[in-house]
Amino acid sequence: MMPDKSEAVKPSHLFYQSRTRRPLATHAEGIYIWDESGRRVIDGSSGAMVVNIGHSNPNVLAAMKAQMDKATFIYRLHFENEPAEELARQLVRRMPEGMDKVFFVSGGSEAVESAIKLARQWAVATKQASRWKVISRFPSYHGATFGALSVTGYDALTAPFTPMVPDMPKIGAPTAYLDRDNLTYEDRGLKYADQLEEKILAEGADSVLAFIMEPIGGASTGALVAPDSYYGRIREICDKYGILLIHDEVMSGAGRTGKYLGGDHWNCRPDIIAMSKGLGAGYVPLGAMIASDRIVQPVLSAGGFAHGYTYAGNPLACAAGLAVLEEIDRLDLLTNATVMGERLKQGLLDLAEIFPFIGDVRGKGLLLAAEFVADKNTMEPLPAGLNAYQHIVEIAYKRGLIIYSRRSRGGVEGDHFLICPPMIITAEEVDLILSIIKDSLEELAQMLDLPVNR
Image (cartoon, rainbow, N blue to C red; front, side, top):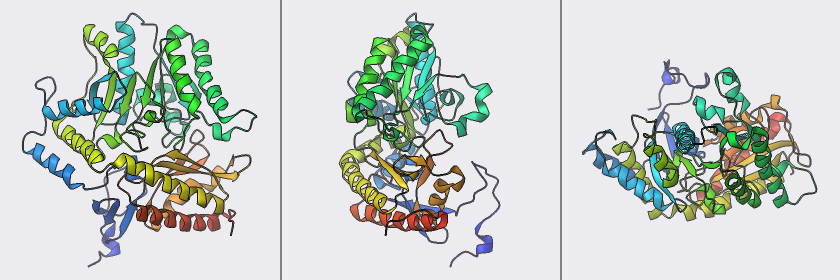
Protein backbone atom coordinates (compact mmCIF):
# COMPACT_ATOMS: atom_id res chain seq x y z
CA MET A 1 0.00 0.00 0.00
CA MET A 2 1.31 3.44 -0.91
CA PRO A 3 1.82 5.78 2.10
CA ASP A 4 -0.71 8.55 2.57
CA LYS A 5 0.85 11.74 1.20
CA SER A 6 -0.23 13.70 4.23
CA GLU A 7 1.93 11.43 6.35
CA ALA A 8 4.81 11.02 3.89
CA VAL A 9 6.95 13.88 5.21
CA LYS A 10 7.26 13.83 8.99
CA PRO A 11 8.74 16.76 10.89
CA SER A 12 12.51 16.45 11.11
CA HIS A 13 14.92 17.52 13.82
CA LEU A 14 17.83 17.23 11.38
CA PHE A 15 19.16 20.11 9.36
CA TYR A 16 21.67 20.20 6.57
CA GLN A 17 22.45 22.82 3.92
CA SER A 18 18.95 24.13 3.25
CA ARG A 19 15.29 23.57 4.10
CA THR A 20 14.79 21.27 1.12
CA ARG A 21 13.16 17.97 2.05
CA ARG A 22 13.52 14.76 0.08
CA PRO A 23 11.63 11.45 0.15
CA LEU A 24 12.72 8.83 2.67
CA ALA A 25 15.01 6.24 1.11
CA THR A 26 14.19 2.62 1.96
CA HIS A 27 16.93 0.65 0.22
CA ALA A 28 19.59 0.84 -2.48
CA GLU A 29 21.22 -1.67 -4.81
CA GLY A 30 23.61 -1.29 -7.72
CA ILE A 31 23.07 2.15 -9.26
CA TYR A 32 19.54 2.53 -7.87
CA ILE A 33 17.87 3.93 -4.74
CA TRP A 34 14.23 3.34 -3.82
CA ASP A 35 12.01 5.60 -1.72
CA GLU A 36 9.09 4.78 0.54
CA SER A 37 6.59 5.11 -2.31
CA GLY A 38 8.43 2.42 -4.24
CA ARG A 39 9.87 4.87 -6.77
CA ARG A 40 13.26 3.91 -8.16
CA VAL A 41 15.85 6.63 -8.83
CA ILE A 42 19.17 6.30 -10.65
CA ASP A 43 22.10 7.43 -8.53
CA GLY A 44 23.82 9.28 -11.35
CA SER A 45 26.23 11.08 -9.02
CA SER A 46 27.19 8.12 -6.79
CA GLY A 47 25.89 10.16 -3.88
CA ALA A 48 28.55 12.85 -3.67
CA MET A 49 30.87 10.96 -6.03
CA VAL A 50 31.34 8.33 -3.33
CA VAL A 51 29.56 5.05 -4.17
CA ASN A 52 32.14 3.97 -6.75
CA ILE A 53 31.30 0.25 -6.74
CA GLY A 54 27.53 0.66 -6.37
CA HIS A 55 25.18 0.17 -3.47
CA SER A 56 24.80 -2.99 -1.36
CA ASN A 57 27.64 -5.01 -2.84
CA PRO A 58 27.23 -8.41 -1.15
CA ASN A 59 30.95 -9.14 -0.89
CA VAL A 60 31.65 -5.86 0.89
CA LEU A 61 28.72 -6.41 3.25
CA ALA A 62 29.96 -9.93 4.00
CA ALA A 63 33.44 -8.65 4.80
CA MET A 64 31.97 -6.07 7.15
CA LYS A 65 29.81 -8.65 8.89
CA ALA A 66 32.79 -10.97 9.31
CA GLN A 67 34.83 -8.17 10.90
CA MET A 68 31.92 -7.21 13.17
CA ASP A 69 32.07 -10.68 14.65
CA LYS A 70 35.70 -10.04 15.62
CA ALA A 71 36.01 -6.39 16.65
CA THR A 72 34.49 -3.09 15.60
CA PHE A 73 36.94 -0.75 17.32
CA ILE A 74 40.63 -1.07 18.08
CA TYR A 75 42.57 2.04 19.07
CA ARG A 76 45.83 2.41 17.21
CA LEU A 77 47.82 3.36 20.33
CA HIS A 78 46.79 0.13 22.07
CA PHE A 79 46.89 -2.53 19.34
CA GLU A 80 47.52 -2.95 15.66
CA ASN A 81 44.77 -4.58 13.60
CA GLU A 82 45.07 -6.72 10.50
CA PRO A 83 42.44 -4.96 8.31
CA ALA A 84 44.28 -1.64 8.68
CA GLU A 85 47.67 -3.20 8.07
CA GLU A 86 46.47 -5.11 4.99
CA LEU A 87 44.58 -2.15 3.52
CA ALA A 88 47.70 -0.01 3.90
CA ARG A 89 49.74 -2.69 2.12
CA GLN A 90 47.26 -2.90 -0.73
CA LEU A 91 47.01 0.88 -1.08
CA VAL A 92 50.79 1.27 -1.27
CA ARG A 93 50.82 -1.23 -4.14
CA ARG A 94 48.60 1.17 -6.09
CA MET A 95 50.56 4.34 -5.33
CA PRO A 96 53.36 5.98 -7.31
CA GLU A 97 56.78 4.54 -6.43
CA GLY A 98 58.03 5.66 -3.05
CA MET A 99 54.62 6.49 -1.59
CA ASP A 100 54.83 3.90 1.15
CA LYS A 101 53.32 5.29 4.36
CA VAL A 102 49.57 5.49 5.07
CA PHE A 103 47.65 7.44 7.70
CA PHE A 104 43.94 6.57 7.87
CA VAL A 105 41.19 9.11 8.52
CA SER A 106 37.40 9.20 8.23
CA GLY A 107 36.81 11.66 5.38
CA GLY A 108 38.20 13.99 2.75
CA SER A 109 38.50 17.09 4.90
CA GLU A 110 40.42 15.07 7.49
CA ALA A 111 42.72 13.71 4.76
CA VAL A 112 43.53 17.22 3.53
CA GLU A 113 44.03 18.52 7.08
CA SER A 114 46.40 15.62 7.74
CA ALA A 115 48.37 16.33 4.57
CA ILE A 116 48.82 20.01 5.43
CA LYS A 117 49.84 19.24 9.01
CA LEU A 118 52.29 16.53 7.95
CA ALA A 119 53.87 18.91 5.44
CA ARG A 120 54.29 21.60 8.08
CA GLN A 121 55.76 19.22 10.65
CA TRP A 122 58.16 17.88 8.03
CA ALA A 123 59.36 21.43 7.39
CA VAL A 124 59.88 22.06 11.10
CA ALA A 125 61.62 18.71 11.57
CA THR A 126 64.00 19.41 8.67
CA LYS A 127 64.87 22.90 9.93
CA GLN A 128 62.76 24.75 7.37
CA ALA A 129 60.41 26.36 9.86
CA SER A 130 60.05 29.48 7.72
CA ARG A 131 57.93 27.45 5.30
CA TRP A 132 54.23 27.62 6.16
CA LYS A 133 52.28 28.89 3.15
CA VAL A 134 50.29 26.38 1.12
CA ILE A 135 49.50 27.63 -2.37
CA SER A 136 46.31 26.34 -3.98
CA ARG A 137 44.12 27.20 -6.95
CA PHE A 138 41.07 29.34 -7.53
CA PRO A 139 38.53 27.89 -7.96
CA SER A 140 39.09 24.73 -5.94
CA TYR A 141 37.56 22.75 -3.13
CA HIS A 142 39.57 20.86 -0.53
CA GLY A 143 37.19 20.42 2.39
CA ALA A 144 35.02 22.07 5.00
CA THR A 145 37.26 22.28 8.06
CA PHE A 146 39.17 25.50 8.72
CA GLY A 147 42.52 24.20 7.50
CA ALA A 148 40.97 22.77 4.35
CA LEU A 149 38.96 25.96 3.81
CA SER A 150 42.16 28.01 3.89
CA VAL A 151 43.28 26.29 0.68
CA THR A 152 39.80 26.16 -0.86
CA GLY A 153 38.99 28.74 -3.52
CA TYR A 154 35.22 28.88 -3.64
CA ASP A 155 33.63 32.12 -2.49
CA ALA A 156 30.21 30.70 -1.72
CA LEU A 157 31.73 28.40 0.90
CA THR A 158 34.64 30.43 2.23
CA ALA A 159 33.29 34.00 2.46
CA PRO A 160 31.50 33.68 5.85
CA PHE A 161 34.68 32.45 7.49
CA THR A 162 37.22 34.88 6.00
CA PRO A 163 38.11 36.55 9.35
CA MET A 164 38.72 33.14 10.94
CA VAL A 165 40.80 31.40 8.27
CA PRO A 166 44.43 32.04 7.24
CA ASP A 167 44.66 33.79 3.89
CA MET A 168 46.62 31.24 1.88
CA PRO A 169 47.89 32.32 -1.58
CA LYS A 170 46.04 31.22 -4.72
CA ILE A 171 46.82 30.88 -8.40
CA GLY A 172 44.34 30.42 -11.21
CA ALA A 173 42.96 26.98 -11.95
CA PRO A 174 44.05 25.79 -15.43
CA THR A 175 40.82 26.79 -17.21
CA ALA A 176 42.40 26.63 -20.65
CA TYR A 177 39.01 25.86 -22.23
CA LEU A 178 37.94 29.45 -21.52
CA ASP A 179 40.96 31.12 -23.09
CA ARG A 180 40.64 32.97 -26.36
CA ASP A 181 44.25 33.57 -27.36
CA ASN A 182 46.74 32.46 -30.00
CA LEU A 183 48.49 29.91 -27.78
CA THR A 184 48.32 26.18 -28.41
CA TYR A 185 46.44 24.16 -25.83
CA GLU A 186 49.69 22.76 -24.45
CA ASP A 187 51.25 26.23 -24.27
CA ARG A 188 48.25 27.30 -22.23
CA GLY A 189 48.99 24.46 -19.83
CA LEU A 190 52.52 25.78 -19.35
CA LYS A 191 51.19 29.30 -18.89
CA TYR A 192 48.95 28.19 -16.03
CA ALA A 193 51.68 26.07 -14.43
CA ASP A 194 54.11 28.99 -14.57
CA GLN A 195 51.71 30.96 -12.39
CA LEU A 196 52.93 28.73 -9.57
CA GLU A 197 56.53 29.86 -9.97
CA GLU A 198 55.44 33.48 -10.16
CA LYS A 199 53.44 33.12 -6.95
CA ILE A 200 56.32 31.36 -5.16
CA LEU A 201 58.67 34.20 -6.01
CA ALA A 202 56.10 36.83 -5.03
CA GLU A 203 55.50 35.18 -1.65
CA GLY A 204 59.17 34.40 -1.03
CA ALA A 205 60.34 30.86 -1.77
CA ASP A 206 61.54 30.29 1.80
CA SER A 207 58.00 30.86 3.09
CA VAL A 208 56.22 28.41 0.75
CA LEU A 209 55.61 24.94 2.12
CA ALA A 210 53.46 23.16 -0.46
CA PHE A 211 51.20 23.35 -3.47
CA ILE A 212 47.89 21.47 -3.33
CA MET A 213 45.82 20.60 -6.40
CA GLU A 214 43.17 18.22 -7.67
CA PRO A 215 44.67 16.34 -10.65
CA ILE A 216 41.17 16.28 -12.11
CA GLY A 217 38.82 18.87 -10.71
CA GLY A 218 35.82 18.08 -8.57
CA ALA A 219 32.59 19.98 -8.07
CA SER A 220 34.21 23.41 -7.80
CA THR A 221 35.52 23.34 -11.36
CA GLY A 222 33.27 20.68 -12.90
CA ALA A 223 35.73 17.86 -13.62
CA LEU A 224 38.39 20.24 -14.94
CA VAL A 225 41.27 18.57 -16.79
CA ALA A 226 44.39 20.64 -17.44
CA PRO A 227 46.39 20.39 -20.68
CA ASP A 228 48.86 17.49 -20.49
CA SER A 229 51.81 19.90 -20.33
CA TYR A 230 50.60 21.31 -17.01
CA TYR A 231 51.34 18.32 -14.80
CA GLY A 232 55.03 17.80 -15.49
CA ARG A 233 55.79 21.51 -15.26
CA ILE A 234 54.13 21.71 -11.84
CA ARG A 235 56.40 18.91 -10.61
CA GLU A 236 59.46 20.67 -12.02
CA ILE A 237 58.59 23.92 -10.25
CA CYS A 238 57.98 22.21 -6.92
CA ASP A 239 61.33 20.40 -7.17
CA LYS A 240 63.14 23.60 -8.12
CA TYR A 241 62.03 25.39 -4.96
CA GLY A 242 61.93 22.44 -2.56
CA ILE A 243 58.15 22.64 -2.21
CA LEU A 244 55.94 19.64 -1.46
CA LEU A 245 53.31 18.70 -4.03
CA ILE A 246 50.03 17.52 -2.49
CA HIS A 247 47.47 15.80 -4.69
CA ASP A 248 43.88 15.98 -3.50
CA GLU A 249 42.52 12.71 -4.90
CA VAL A 250 39.45 12.70 -2.66
CA MET A 251 37.12 12.75 -5.66
CA SER A 252 39.34 11.68 -8.54
CA GLY A 253 40.92 8.71 -6.75
CA ALA A 254 39.83 5.12 -6.13
CA GLY A 255 39.32 4.36 -9.81
CA ARG A 256 36.63 6.85 -10.79
CA THR A 257 38.58 8.28 -13.74
CA GLY A 258 39.67 4.92 -15.18
CA LYS A 259 43.01 4.93 -13.34
CA TYR A 260 43.29 4.22 -9.63
CA LEU A 261 44.50 7.79 -9.10
CA GLY A 262 43.59 10.74 -11.26
CA GLY A 263 47.26 11.70 -11.40
CA ASP A 264 48.10 8.30 -12.92
CA HIS A 265 46.90 9.58 -16.30
CA TRP A 266 50.07 11.70 -16.40
CA ASN A 267 52.36 9.47 -14.29
CA CYS A 268 52.39 12.19 -11.67
CA ARG A 269 54.67 11.92 -8.65
CA PRO A 270 53.22 13.89 -5.75
CA ASP A 271 54.82 13.99 -2.31
CA ILE A 272 51.57 13.54 -0.38
CA ILE A 273 48.18 12.20 -1.48
CA ALA A 274 44.80 12.77 0.19
CA MET A 275 42.07 10.20 -0.52
CA SER A 276 38.56 9.43 0.67
CA LYS A 277 35.09 9.10 -0.97
CA GLY A 278 35.54 6.06 -3.25
CA LEU A 279 38.09 4.51 -0.88
CA GLY A 280 35.27 3.43 1.41
CA ALA A 281 32.74 3.70 -1.45
CA GLY A 282 29.96 4.82 0.88
CA TYR A 283 30.02 1.68 3.00
CA VAL A 284 31.93 3.36 5.83
CA PRO A 285 33.51 6.75 6.56
CA LEU A 286 37.08 6.18 5.39
CA GLY A 287 39.94 8.21 3.99
CA ALA A 288 43.70 8.12 3.87
CA MET A 289 46.77 10.29 3.59
CA ILE A 290 49.66 8.62 1.79
CA ALA A 291 53.20 9.97 1.89
CA SER A 292 56.77 8.85 1.36
CA ASP A 293 59.06 7.61 4.09
CA ARG A 294 61.29 10.59 3.27
CA ILE A 295 58.65 12.87 4.74
CA VAL A 296 57.32 10.68 7.53
CA GLN A 297 60.58 9.58 9.18
CA PRO A 298 61.90 13.08 10.06
CA VAL A 299 58.55 13.87 11.69
CA LEU A 300 58.57 10.68 13.75
CA SER A 301 62.21 11.24 14.72
CA ALA A 302 61.43 14.79 15.87
CA GLY A 303 58.94 13.59 18.47
CA GLY A 304 56.09 12.09 16.47
CA PHE A 305 53.19 13.26 14.32
CA ALA A 306 51.26 15.78 16.44
CA HIS A 307 47.92 14.83 14.99
CA GLY A 308 45.33 12.07 15.18
CA TYR A 309 41.72 10.97 14.97
CA THR A 310 39.77 8.58 17.18
CA TYR A 311 38.65 6.42 14.26
CA ALA A 312 42.00 6.35 12.41
CA GLY A 313 42.59 2.81 11.18
CA ASN A 314 39.24 1.55 12.47
CA PRO A 315 39.14 -2.22 11.75
CA LEU A 316 35.56 -2.24 10.49
CA ALA A 317 36.19 0.67 8.16
CA CYS A 318 39.43 -0.84 6.88
CA ALA A 319 37.81 -4.26 6.35
CA ALA A 320 35.21 -2.55 4.18
CA GLY A 321 37.88 -0.56 2.32
CA LEU A 322 39.85 -3.72 1.64
CA ALA A 323 36.75 -5.45 0.27
CA VAL A 324 36.07 -2.42 -1.95
CA LEU A 325 39.58 -2.70 -3.41
CA GLU A 326 39.03 -6.40 -4.04
CA GLU A 327 35.76 -5.70 -5.86
CA ILE A 328 37.41 -3.06 -8.03
CA ASP A 329 39.94 -5.68 -9.12
CA ARG A 330 37.51 -8.60 -9.39
CA LEU A 331 35.04 -6.70 -11.55
CA ASP A 332 37.78 -4.86 -13.51
CA LEU A 333 36.08 -1.58 -12.73
CA LEU A 334 38.95 0.60 -13.93
CA THR A 335 38.36 -0.74 -17.43
CA ASN A 336 34.61 -0.34 -17.09
CA ALA A 337 35.00 3.24 -15.86
CA THR A 338 37.10 3.98 -18.94
CA VAL A 339 34.79 2.33 -21.47
CA MET A 340 31.52 3.54 -19.96
CA GLY A 341 33.04 6.97 -19.37
CA GLU A 342 33.87 7.27 -23.07
CA ARG A 343 30.31 6.26 -23.97
CA LEU A 344 28.80 8.73 -21.52
CA LYS A 345 31.12 11.56 -22.57
CA GLN A 346 30.33 11.03 -26.26
CA GLY A 347 26.64 11.07 -25.41
CA LEU A 348 27.05 14.40 -23.60
CA LEU A 349 28.99 15.80 -26.57
CA ASP A 350 26.14 14.73 -28.85
CA LEU A 351 23.68 16.54 -26.56
CA ALA A 352 25.85 19.66 -26.76
CA GLU A 353 25.11 19.72 -30.51
CA ILE A 354 21.39 19.76 -29.79
CA PHE A 355 21.58 22.18 -26.86
CA PRO A 356 24.02 25.00 -27.74
CA PHE A 357 23.85 26.35 -24.18
CA ILE A 358 26.17 23.45 -23.26
CA GLY A 359 29.50 25.15 -23.82
CA ASP A 360 31.91 22.48 -22.62
CA VAL A 361 31.93 18.77 -21.79
CA ARG A 362 34.94 17.57 -19.82
CA GLY A 363 36.41 15.05 -17.44
CA LYS A 364 37.87 11.55 -17.52
CA GLY A 365 36.29 8.16 -16.94
CA LEU A 366 33.15 8.52 -14.87
CA LEU A 367 34.02 11.95 -13.49
CA LEU A 368 32.31 14.07 -16.13
CA ALA A 369 30.66 17.47 -16.31
CA ALA A 370 28.88 19.79 -18.73
CA GLU A 371 28.99 23.57 -18.34
CA PHE A 372 26.19 25.91 -19.42
CA VAL A 373 26.98 29.11 -21.32
CA ALA A 374 25.10 32.02 -22.84
CA ASP A 375 27.46 32.17 -25.83
CA LYS A 376 29.48 29.19 -27.02
CA ASN A 377 31.96 31.35 -28.91
CA THR A 378 32.90 33.62 -26.03
CA MET A 379 32.04 31.14 -23.24
CA GLU A 380 30.08 33.86 -21.49
CA PRO A 381 28.26 32.17 -18.62
CA LEU A 382 24.50 32.00 -18.32
CA PRO A 383 23.14 34.80 -16.10
CA ALA A 384 23.55 33.64 -12.52
CA GLY A 385 20.01 34.74 -11.71
CA LEU A 386 18.59 31.99 -13.92
CA ASN A 387 19.89 29.38 -11.43
CA ALA A 388 20.13 26.86 -14.26
CA TYR A 389 22.40 24.61 -12.20
CA GLN A 390 19.72 24.20 -9.54
CA HIS A 391 16.87 23.78 -12.00
CA ILE A 392 18.59 20.99 -13.94
CA VAL A 393 19.09 18.99 -10.75
CA GLU A 394 15.42 19.31 -9.77
CA ILE A 395 14.15 18.50 -13.26
CA ALA A 396 16.34 15.39 -13.50
CA TYR A 397 15.36 14.31 -9.99
CA LYS A 398 11.69 14.56 -10.93
CA ARG A 399 12.45 12.29 -13.88
CA GLY A 400 14.24 9.70 -11.74
CA LEU A 401 17.90 10.70 -12.05
CA ILE A 402 20.21 12.16 -9.42
CA ILE A 403 22.92 14.48 -10.75
CA TYR A 404 25.20 16.97 -9.02
CA SER A 405 25.67 20.64 -9.82
CA ARG A 406 27.78 23.61 -8.79
CA ARG A 407 29.28 26.71 -10.38
CA SER A 408 32.66 26.54 -12.10
CA ARG A 409 33.74 30.15 -11.74
CA GLY A 410 34.39 30.76 -8.08
CA GLY A 411 30.99 29.52 -6.98
CA VAL A 412 29.18 32.63 -8.22
CA GLU A 413 28.57 31.79 -11.90
CA GLY A 414 29.47 29.23 -14.55
CA ASP A 415 26.65 26.72 -13.94
CA HIS A 416 27.59 23.09 -14.54
CA PHE A 417 26.30 19.64 -13.72
CA LEU A 418 28.27 16.49 -13.05
CA ILE A 419 27.39 12.96 -14.17
CA CYS A 420 29.35 10.47 -12.07
CA PRO A 421 27.49 7.15 -11.80
CA PRO A 422 28.94 4.09 -10.04
CA MET A 423 31.74 2.31 -11.88
CA ILE A 424 29.58 -0.82 -12.27
CA ILE A 425 27.27 0.92 -14.74
CA THR A 426 26.34 -0.88 -17.99
CA ALA A 427 25.98 0.46 -21.51
CA GLU A 428 22.19 0.18 -21.29
CA GLU A 429 22.20 2.20 -18.07
CA VAL A 430 24.45 4.87 -19.60
CA ASP A 431 21.99 5.22 -22.46
CA LEU A 432 19.09 5.47 -20.01
CA ILE A 433 20.89 8.28 -18.15
CA LEU A 434 21.54 10.12 -21.41
CA SER A 435 17.88 9.79 -22.37
CA ILE A 436 16.77 11.34 -19.07
CA ILE A 437 19.34 14.13 -19.38
CA LYS A 438 18.10 14.91 -22.89
CA ASP A 439 14.50 15.18 -21.68
CA SER A 440 15.64 17.28 -18.72
CA LEU A 441 17.56 19.66 -20.97
CA GLU A 442 14.49 20.02 -23.17
CA GLU A 443 12.46 21.06 -20.15
CA LEU A 444 15.20 23.40 -18.92
CA ALA A 445 15.41 25.06 -22.33
CA GLN A 446 11.67 25.63 -22.36
CA MET A 447 11.67 26.93 -18.78
CA LEU A 448 14.51 29.43 -19.31
CA ASP A 449 13.93 30.19 -23.01
CA LEU A 450 17.27 28.71 -24.07
CA PRO A 451 18.08 27.75 -27.67
CA VAL A 452 17.66 24.22 -29.05
CA ASN A 453 18.85 22.89 -32.41
CA ARG A 454 15.93 20.89 -33.78
